[in-house]
Image (tube, rainbow, N blue to C red; front, side):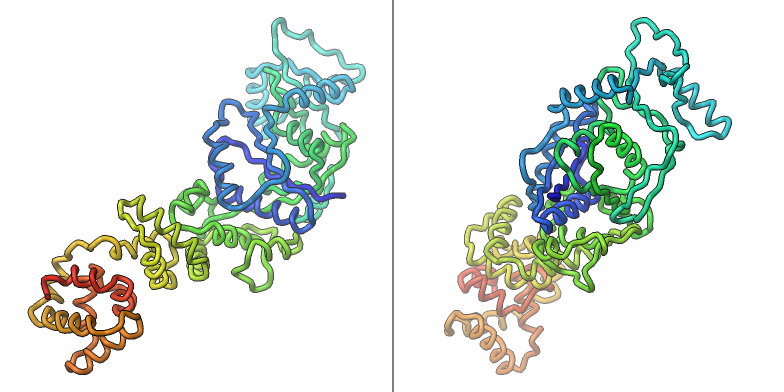
Length: 463
């Protein structure tokens, strides 16, 4: 059997990290087994679905590089198919019309809760041999319910959780079509997975309760049962359900916040799955290594500090030309025109091993293109008559050498030694004037990237 997986988000909100991890595992399993990874938009909840949410999902998948096979399927374009199978089930007796009103069902639920019983539909409109059904109310729009087996056990071997058994007595006759005729989630999923030849359903373990219902539906349709893998939830560091304060935000926010897609993919791949002690690996390696034997059945914890560390590791090794293009775009967005790609590249090389975030990295090189504002406190501490004199003398020396990084650094070392100075006595005043702060890489390397002409502009009052 060909391996076919699917990622099937509902466009009722943003694509968050839990959804991305599900997509990642589905993608990796399909690629490892030379199968297909499908994308399906489950948009039958018309009131809550939105075009913006669909676009956010598609943008997130594109940014992460999770390319789907075949055409994207939208459930709202498949309503005729669902209607066809609902009619088939009505005709076969596997489904029936239910005329119970919302008020009736609410009262039933209240009574069951008062008695301490599990709230469930009582089968009042379920056809049975020898059972007389009431007369349908006039002008009523019925729902359609699946005639779930009353006895027996639904059993499957979950690829993550192991063997799971659910007694049919725990299940009721659930609705497969609403009173307005629109099909429900559990029904659409079953028809879609069957019609699309999905072999492996990989999803969060909050869907475990849906699985026995879906298996019963598939059995009634005499359709093949896919393999199921239910992934444990991702929790915050405090053990609570992942929320916005933990990092459960629109995945595109991570792009805005300075993360590389490669580092986010890598980090989420390690949430609940492992390959020995490997922490950093490519998407190609992940797809090659992925298996369910190493997916944990316990919840994973989202640790932003670890994501930051991993992002820093990727920044260190990132293609400098790609990084240069990204920096040029970002600098122009923040009103810092930076058109000299060579200066951008050289400046990035000074900082990229120091930073764990792209935004911070790009902000740190702004001073190469825009003269920093005067910091009065630093000026008063480091700029005085003596430091001005030293800066003038050093610039005079720098004008006489070849403009190469090693020669500049050697010139500064010789200047310090020949004038009986300590290195900070020249380096700190230069940092104040050149960069506007003291936390910079090697001052000689900064001067080299900045250039002699710009250096003279920034220390002009000393000259």
